Image 1 (cartoon, rainbow, N blue to C red):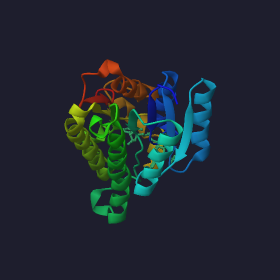
Image 2 (cartoon, rainbow, N blue to C red):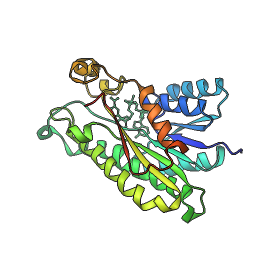
Image 3 (cartoon, rainbow, N blue to C red):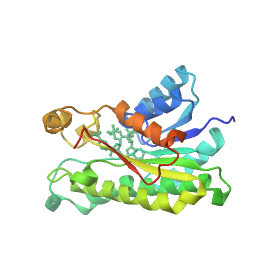
Image 4 (cartoon, rainbow, N blue to C red):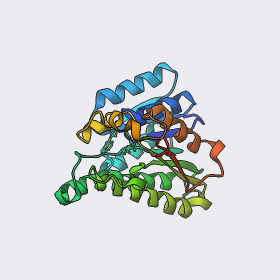
Length: 250
Ligand code: NAP
């Protein structure tokens, strides 16, 4: 073990999570790339990090499952040391539909990953970071969405509502642990070129909406990663419970 900070990026195998893992690795963090299913993609991110000289591991865990999340943090304790930075990036959306067509199983699937999973990771991180529990402090960044402000009508109000919960979690947890050495902040991306939109049934959604965005284009995962890195860093030492919107002005 050494004194380098340890970061876990949930859902770090692709998209915004992979860009964040790569940036944090370049900046000297030891990295845990968490993923749910795609082992090859997670290993590719880890191999890129190692090629740059960073320490990195990939750990499969479905953050919606409590036993998986407990195992994830135990592996990090053992292999990298106590986590000092948590990026709650893992999130899902499901095919676009109106609220009146949503089954309970679909709504719960969204909430279990986007809300329960994010809570569980915060809980495990706070246990390790909080000075109240003998930790040395740390920094948490939650990845919410512009959808929490916009509502995603006709597309996925369930997803938007789950991100509203992430916003409230950010504010509440930030206040709860502010005096214990932990800062909790949030980014709210929108219209980022990743594969997530294919999961919503519209792979080219960002291109369709580009003209309605004040900056007239979609964003890149790297643009979101830059904000996450800043919020985690000591340069943001007086920011907690705060939000950075990365949605081209929407
Ligand atoms: P993405 O390309 O779809 O990647 C999602 C990542 O999350 C994958 O690594 C996936 O792993 C992982 N994941 C999903 N469910 C998981 C679970 N239960 N446990 C552990 N890992 C899980 O997504 P993205 O577009 O980069 O989005 C990342 C975050 O940004 C999400 O929270 C999303 O809501 C938010 N966001 C994205 C946009 C956008 O325009 N793209 C806009 C606003 C907010 P596997 O591939 O192994 O399943």
